[in-house]
Length: 241
Image 1 (tube, helix red, strand yellow):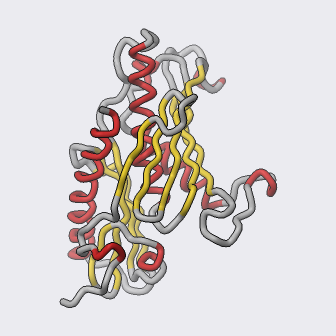
Image 2 (cartoon, rainbow, N blue to C red):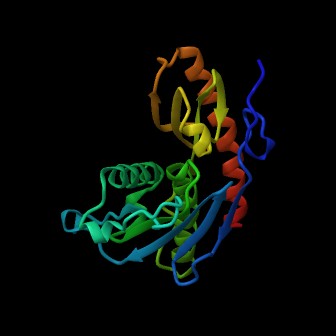
């Protein structure tokens, strides 16, 4: 099969050039700038020594996420949610996904009665912003937990594993990893896959736009995602030192 030319001359199973820069926002308890091709997201972790009222008194902590795109992140100005009075449906869906993905590897008893807020702000968007947000937010959280432990505020890290996410899809009949916007916008099938560093599936979001997704193609996409997340895990490990 002849594969279409991809950005950065990538093979079908290739990630875009990806970097994770830790400590990008100095005042935050933990932070990282993740870049995947032209997609760039600032991820920060902020610690609050309390939990939501519905959790108070249980001795357990909480982790939650917020997501937003800067007005010029896609070229055409995107109106800020604050000016509209509420986040749009896409924003709510993505920040809930980020929160679910990260909470899957957190021991809330070990965190104690404190909340860690993960804020993911998209600087530039060229596809895969929700996946980049999950991968970068985990690094920010890991750095924040290491800082809390170093300050004696935690006896041990509450992280029970690692988590990362990557997009994949069927474009022109071919399974591809890490879709940029031009690929995502023409894909017959697009998927976002969240996995632990040990290969466990946390969440799969898959949509067939025109052609129903076959079991064989799903297996192909999951294999691609697994290889991509293995590479992202190595970058996360380097970022936290």
